[in-house]
Each structure stands twice: as structure tokens, then as C-alpha cells.
Image (tube, rainbow, N blue to C red; front, side):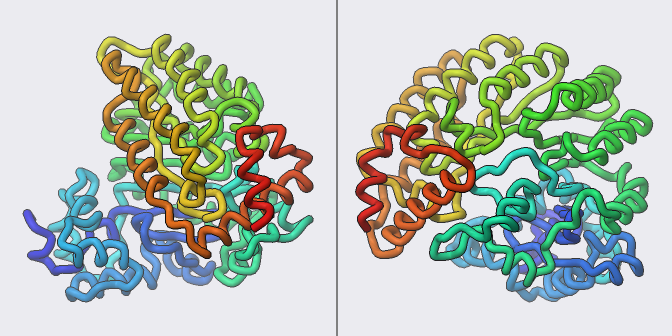
Length: 441
């Protein structure tokens, strides 16, 4: 099938072949654009694959086959109505999707489909409270919000109200979880057809199911499978060593095609530790070094969710990563890739609200990346991603909405300091004038 529009003008193979499952609360979606929806335990009892093949999702598939546009896919419809190619086209042509399209359309709309691209979160247990994260993804955040309530921003940041309203309250790790049980019952059936499998969290290395997954892979090789595991790389050393030992076996014995670790940081030193509360920045760097040293085949992607608090020290983090890249790269490729998405929510922490005088920081960071492209420390793609952020920041509209987000930023850091014993102005002296100015709004 060369053109998915020959099937229907709204068909997208991702609805059948891609899934993200949040087992801590029974939520699921295909593709990252639609919001998640809840699968009841009763539905799960009737269909062990309902975490992907829910009745709700099947109805969206039916609409697609009939040429109707599911409202939850509004992102792609806006892109296409603007005359551009959307993620519907891109994803349907991925290797994990395109070969299966004829099989999809040959079966009834309510057929149970085995996914080929799977992301799974086994639980929300985490030792971090990242400033832009949420209780359903971090047990530390959940404890704080249950103790203190939501942050006093205009949107009541991290209120549990919406989480409860959408049945997204996580099941505590200490309790039996029917969604985890259903996953493991189904997993052997879907495993051999998988192209891509990613473990997210919480912190996966703090969840016993991550080791169970690695043990399963060791016992059941799948040479076509690419595995990705998110980790903050700041867990106790014995847990890290157990994890790396299993990864080493899998890569050395070629149990899968590839394994990559995705870790996150977007600032340097104490500023990184303020954003990612619970982090030890220099231990993070040393653990990455240790992993690269121990497993020659291993690669990392560092996800830098660029936000307002990244701006002052992002270049210093790049300098630290440059040294590791130089120390451990191979002749054919480097072993650390820098990904630079930008934060979209919560708005009070985004670059959308920065002051124009801070653009010079981003200009300096772009120049640093540019200066290191020729030596292949960084890439043109990494430069382009930071330039995209610069363009956004340069076109900030200083309106009432922006002012409200700036007020919320002050309320957030003040509450952050009170609740966590941190000191914003001592950690970010570069923002003293900003803090004074925004405090008077």
C-alpha cells in the first residue's frame, strides 16, 4: 500500500501497531498526540489485550477505516488542513507499521491487533521530583501533593482533582496490580512480533518488572527487537550494577538488535539538581561514564527538556557531556546523542515566558554546539533543535497570559523552596532581577 489515503483519508496504522501503556493506572493511547484513556479492570478481564485493544480504541479504528476523523487525532488534522504531511503519514510508513497495513485492512475493525511498537510504564515509583513532572509518574511527587496539596499557581499545578476525575490515580507499588498481571499474561504472545520496546516510568530501575523483562529477553532472544530504557541513572549502585550486568549479557550475546538508555538532564550542577529534585549531578555523569566503560556496545540519548531554568547553565552541561563523548566515542559513531525538546507544560516553566535579555544565553549555547560540529562532538540536528527553541523565545508575546505565567513562576519557586528546603535565588543568581521584577506583577 503506497498511499494510506487509498485506504481512507483518515487511516493511521499507529492506531493498530503502536501503544503506550501506563500500568500504574490502566491508561493507554496509541501515538503521543491523543490523550490517554482509562481501561477498566472489568474490560481487562474479558480481553487481556485491552490495554491496547480497548473498546474505545477500536471505535476510533472503525472511524478511520470509514474515512471519518477521530477527534482525538486533532493534531494531525490541523497539520493536514494546513497542506502539510502529518505524523499520520510518517508513522504509517515506519518499518514497524507499513509492512502490516495489508494485514490490518484484511481483518474486521474490532479485531485484536498485536502491537509492534510498545512503550510501557510498570509503575510510578521514582526517587526524583522533577519540576515539570506529575504525581501519576512520580511517587515522590504524589507524596508531596498528598501532604501539601497542589502548588498555588492559577492552574493549581499538580492538583489531584484531574487525576481522580480521569481515573489516573496510580496503584501503589506495594499493592497487587491487575494491569501488570494482564501485561505479563499477554507479553509472550506479542513479543516475537515486536520491533521496538521502550520502558518508561517512574524510574524503571526501581521497579522489579524491568529486571523481569531483561531476564525474559535473555531467555528468549529476539534479533529484530530494539529496546530502549529510560533511567535517571541516579539509583543505588547495586541496582545499577544488576541492570548493567543484564544489559551486558543481552548485547554481548546479541539477544536483541539494539539497546539504548535514555536519560535526562537540562542544566548543570546545583541548577540541574533544583530542576530534577533528588538528583546528584556529578554522580549522574560518573554513572554514564561507568556504563559506557563497562559495556562497549551501549549507547545513550540524553533528553534535555529545555525550559526556563535550563537557560543559565545549559552550556556548562554540554561542556561536561562533550568530554564524555570524546572519551568514549568510537571511530564510526559517537555513543551519546543529545535530544533537545522544549517544555510545553507547565507553562510557568517554559521558555515562552523568558525575558529578551536572556536570549544571549541561548545564542552562546548555539555557538558552542556549532563550534563542535566539525569535530563531530555535536550534530547539525542538535543545533537545529536548539535554534528552534531560540526562534520560539525570540517571538515571545508580552501579553496578559504571559504575565500570568510569570506570576505563577514566582508562586511555584516560592512554594518549591518552602516545601523542599531549596533556595531559588542562591541557586539561580542570574535570575535575581527577573525574580524581583516578576514578584511585582
